[in-house]
Image 1 (cartoon, one colour):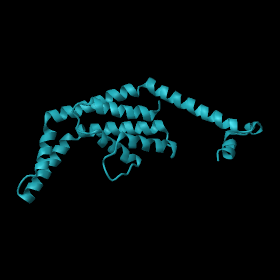
Image 2: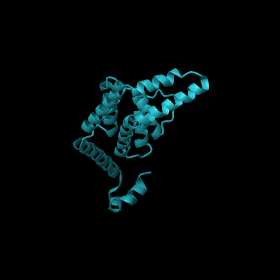
Image 3: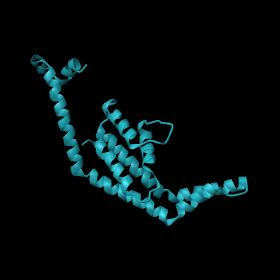
Image 4: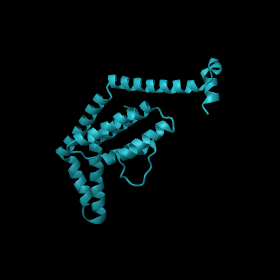
Length: 188
């Protein structure tokens, strides 16, 4: 199993486990895909398109899969935590926006008013906390130290097999050269 497969499965599990979340899996895919170059006009991104983008970056652009997945884990964690960590600021900003809107239009905006009421609501906060807790529990289990070691070992075995197949194409008399010289000559 690859780093990408474990990560995509972790996202699926998070989506299925969170009972009352504020972010759909498509939103998570959008927020995760955008920083890695998934520039699509619509926000209807899914796990499949995110996985395809990751695979493209790893297989075509040469990104190190472990690095990329660790970055995406951190991005998801940061995104979930930002909502709680900046809740007070969001309330203040939206209340100020409500006043500006009311001064300009003579009545409060129902959308902004509903948003302020929703983010001040304790069930909203509890839901945000649950979403973070579920994510952290899944990541701690799926990317534990032993699981990471297993994933690295699998990568090493795959690269060893690839190197073996490559070296079988190199004539015996050429194998006395340095690896750099061999790659320059035979990797084209």
